[in-house]
Length: 474
Image (cartoon, rainbow, N blue to C red; front, side, top):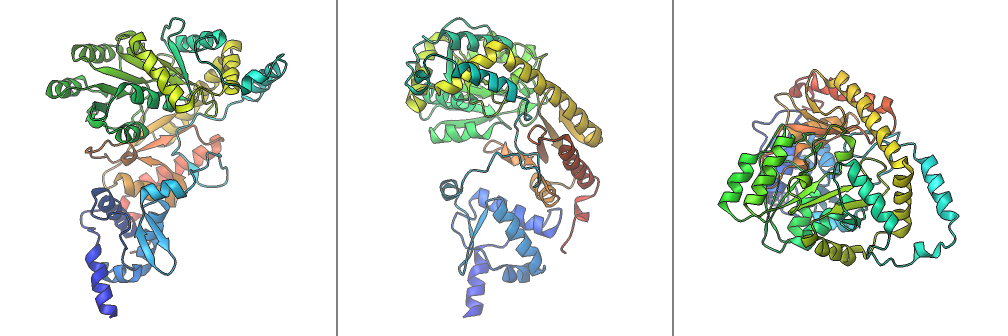
């Protein structure tokens, strides 16, 4: 009976390790991840006991155990006491597993995976804003419904002031408030696209937008990118082949590649969009950080560009206030999507944002983020400069292309083993796009420079060795 069970289990899955580099447990994890992504291992599939898999692979049981542990940490597997190890169901994980805490832990692994701005000295400005609000004659308004019909003149003026800082001139009533940029993107897609519409995204880009698009039953196609960003030739070719409703892109300090489109290329993309009657969803959430950025694409194609930015990536991540600028023909639909999703932005947080912008505190905090970004980019270049590191001196992340022998997944696993968390290229690759051997390093999340330095030094040490030398279990 035991022999029969063994054969049945082995017929379910046996990883293909040939041609892979790195420690054997890492090769098993990467084979597992690929087979799950391809559908060869659907959710709920029971995996062989690690001792039996170890026998078939001619490795130690400890190697397979370590591989299963790493895969479980990455959310690929789940264990059930007394029953075995199973391929995890992502939908069940989302429902049953609480989201990761955004607390900036100073004792755990060095976290270079979360692309957040540095903790700023916002205590003083926030206290002043709250003091002024507390002195208001009527506080009930902050706990009541807001009409959202443009009567908040202070909000409108503050929003236009912030967009002016981003390089976009807006008239009164043209700006729509949202609960951060991600909410703004969600509202734009909900309002302007219908099931079956074709939406283009960067081949490597912001994954949550693709998730939203998939939930809206949109057809998503990747556009090629280079060191500057979206390639006009690729965009033109796709638009000639089929009708395209919308192009989503991040033109400034693109994540993960750090690329910024030149003014000339922005003009070309605007011309292509106009020629093919395509909308542009411009995600400029990182734009305020870069002082020498070109004008937004919305300046070159204002009649078809929905421009989205926020305070979260440039002032304070907990300040969940964003701004959407849309042409008048589209703005009403976006406003209705905001009402449908949250009815209104929280009045108290909205008021805090208005006061920070109006007093100049938001701009001072932005300048502090710019200074931190510059200092940490210098640190990253000093430690990792001998490797293939791509970064902008004013950005909060860097793009590391890995030496020969590494895969994106094996590097991520090895870095985690050394107490450093990174995001690898697979986190950003659009469907059908081969993820390069690369990782994004976020430099803003860690609150202290010395922890960032420690994490970068560990990565430098890891990269200085051939991947196959990183073998703890043979």
